[in-house]
Picture 1 (cartoon, one colour):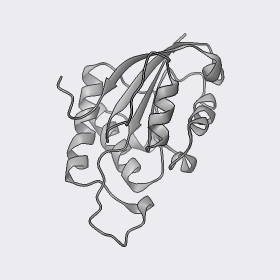
Picture 2 (cartoon, one colour):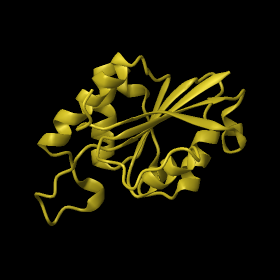
Picture 3 (cartoon, one colour):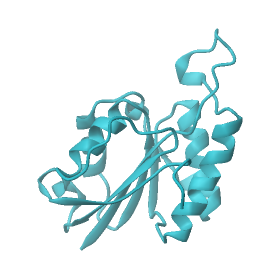
Length: 166
């Protein structure tokens, strides 16, 4: 069975309030613009999720909700996962391997540097130095169960970011 994983870095966040914790930082104006734009881009590419999973940090939550709205996904169905906040690549694998098998396409919204490191592990033919804000990497796999993710060959099919020309 063909499965699709789309890893999305949160959109650009605000540093306007120096007293605000990193976890509580919201999107800035550019982030507010880029998240729905990337959702529209995904929709045009016919990448529609059966499930969205996101970090509980404010900027990741806002990004996930804006992308969900742009593609017509019910934001009440987003799964919020605390451990995706500044996690290491192995945590992404844990989360992915817990996905129910009736899900074919999943979006995960999270943070650098972990998301860049994880993206680089998706395929030996793909490498990035730094995932841009609101950037995304999509991979396809043929597997029966998400629990087989770590032992399944993956092919990166898409690398998109807001400033990339269509």
